[in-house]
Length: 247
View (tube, one colour):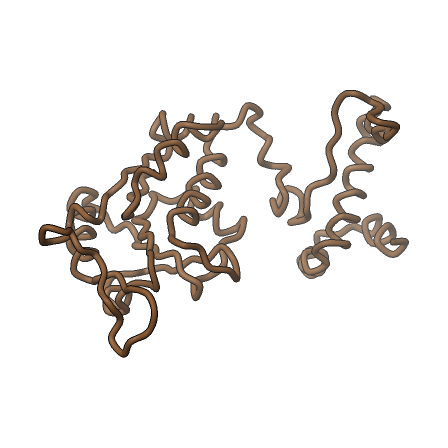
């Protein structure tokens, strides 16, 4: 799969693409990331990519024309119908299901906005999908693009050390959409706090039962909406319901 990133700051991606376990996906081109510097498609001595907003107000607005020229070059290089994605506060919030869909796709063209935003005419003409990470504003779309790339890359075969590791992630359908359980490692006793006996027992059924209960308890406490969603989907067993009733 291929992701083309249109950005004013391609240098931000260099350490990201070369660090951590997900670098395997980028190095092997399982997730082929190509960076396009928007200033290369701007005109004039100053390579201007923004201007003051019509109607006044603070900040600057990204010009439509450099974006359109850059996008045309990306599309010509790709020669496919990849969707154009803009990271925006009005976009659909990215979640695990969305990441799974992108991880099974052929990729996309990611547009990283800056300043007060992008000329709406470019959005109306060229953007197919708008995505958001949540109800907050970033200084640019680069961090959001990295979040999507990282989430997609870690789902690719062979990227994680344990092939089934992501199956136990929070929100994964394999866990019925629940949050993950707490985790512990050596030493068994740290500053007077002992790891749960169930995890030290070596009894796989007891360990599995403890983890299920912990996932239910953590989710009920922090994200009761996920419990409700799992219940509506018929993913909670009578044993689960009996445990939840005791909380």
